[in-house]
Amino acid sequence: MVAHTLLNFDRSALALDAALGGHGVAPTYMVEHDLRAKKQVELWADPDPSGDGLYISWSRDQLGQMRIKRNIDWIASGFA
Image 1 (tube, rainbow, N blue to C red):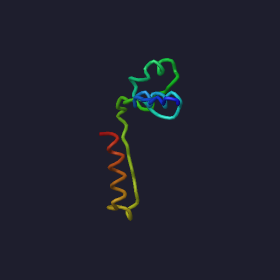
Image 2 (image 1 turned 60 degrees about the vertical axis):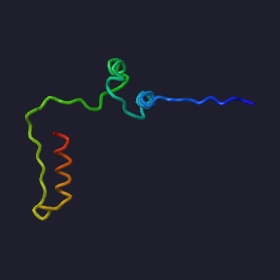
Image 3 (image 1 turned 90 degrees about the vertical axis):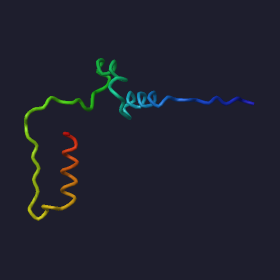
Image 4 (image 1 turned 90 degrees about the horizontal axis):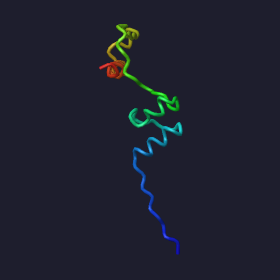
């Protein structure tokens, strides 16, 4: 009879392995070495404010529609 061994994987190790394989993302602190070695790329870094404005427009007949408000709120939430 063959004894079965239970394999236990740490979730962060799985995230790191997926990111290194090009199939996921991992926190920057886990891949700092790979970022410096150009093996990984940073997806998002908080940029310095540019001072540029962000504008959105829509037609008058759409004014007041809930879907427009939801889209504006979603966009604005990325800059809060």
